[in-house]
Structure formats: structure tokens, C-alpha cells
Image (cartoon, rainbow, N blue to C red):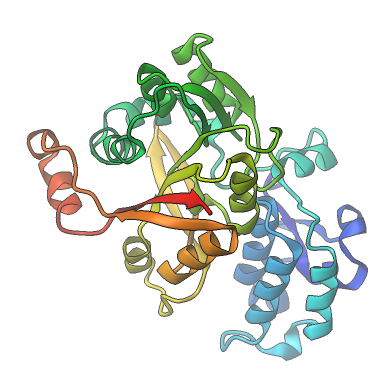
Length: 343
């Protein structure tokens, strides 16, 4: 039997989220699930299930399901009759988040194989991150330059990974707290930082375990494109900053990821998959594309005023060390950098 677990999203609107774990759980190789009728919607349903796995709100998933039903690829005669009332049902429970932690609790010893499982390749990822062109010679120096002087500041490194950014911030005199959803990455950060930072497991789709105005600055390096919905994390970041506090983050450039996906509609917010090779393993990764206006709108709605939008050039040393990557980074969009101030 396959160890991949799929949630039958078609059943959820009928009974609501409160009983979701008692219905609709099927194995991918279940013949009934793989029937011709269901197979036509397999891509849509798996996408909705993965949105749940990654903590999407009920309203977001409902909007996706409704859009899938009305798309040209589907025929509603084979799909349950979703309508506006179903969206209302989901919206009414939009504060319910079904995260990886919740799923692991529900299934107990059952193994869930999901995208973006950094615990499965933490050491290999961190080793590559230390030296590659994209991180070591592009993203990291660019975002640290954007952060500027942090001496004496209390800084939250949101999505700290193996602690490379935290180490640089500490060397510049910051008092650092790091959070990440991956226990494996946090173990690496703990070894690197040797007690010089407070490190906690936290999910950016949920409320963060800190008091209001706890930090002077928040840094979020290459983490926002993993999130299906920016409203919760940005709201929390706003809560954790004083008036005038800064949020500095990097994310996939929308012109880069949209061009690579082959999707038609740039203005949609949608997920896309990649396969990474790390440590001799194929790693399934899932990211979220959102158009530029959606990024600006999300920041404004969360109470931030954009100070700087940057499309930086790589470290000049990359030209010799990584000539092909350097050529790409100096001619094509890759990451986008924001500095935003709490209004």
C-alpha cells in the first residue's frame, strides 16, 4: 500500500471541518479512488488536500475547489454540486487550520509524505545552502544589506533554517530569536549558533508564541513562497513589531516562477511543484506563485507600508565561481526583496 495519504476534499463541505478526520481518507492506490470518474479530478483534489496539509484556511481551499469545478477541464456532472453556499460554510470556519502537526496527531503512527519535508534532507540542504550561488552569493548578502545596521536590535528570524542568517545578524550585534517548522533544520541551527540565539519550532500559518511588539525587526528569508495565504503571517508580523518596526523579506520573483511553470494566467495565485536533488534523494517541493499586486495588497492589508522593493545583483565573486548562475542572476529575475514598515 502507498504511504501517501490523500484527503477526499469532496466530502468536506457536506459535513464540515469539525469531523474531517472521520471521513474521506483514502490511499492513492485504492481502486475506488483511482476509478475513471475520480481520476479526472485527481489533480484538483490532490491540490486541495495539499493546501490543507500546508495550513490553508477553509475559505482558501473552498475557493480553489469551486474554481476547479467550474474550470474548462472538469465536467460538473462528475463532481459534487459545490456552490456559493459551500463557500459560506468554509468561510464560517475559516479560522480552522489543518496543519502538518494536526495531521500527524490524527494519524498517529501513520506516515505522511508531504512536500517541503525539510526534516528529510536538512543536512544536505544546509550544506548546499552554505556555498551555492543562489543563497550564498545572491540572497543572503542581498537581504543582509537590506537589513542594514541591527546592533542592539531584537530580531526575529522567521524561517531561520540552519541559522546562516541568524549567525550573521548576531555577528552584527543583534539579539536573535529564530523560528522554523523543521526540527531538523533547527538542530543544525542550534549546533551552528551554540546557544547564542533562542530557537523555537513554530508554524507561520499559526499564531506565533510571542508577546505584542516583542521585536524591533523581522527577517523572513525565502519562506513566504511556501505559504498559500499571506494574511495570517503578515498579521502576526505586524503584531510583533512596534510602530515603525521593519519587516524585511525575500521571496520568489513572480516573473521568475510564473515563466517556469508554463501556466497561462500570471494574475492567479497558484501552487506549482518542483523536484530537487539533495543528498542523492529526489525531494518533492511545492511553492506558491502570487502576482506582484497580490504581494503589495497583502502587505497593505496587514498594516505595512512598503519602504523598498529590490531586485539586486549577485555578489561579483559569483562571476568566477559560478559563471552560468551569474549570467542567469544578472539577466533574469530570481528573487524579490521587500523592506516594509509597520504603519
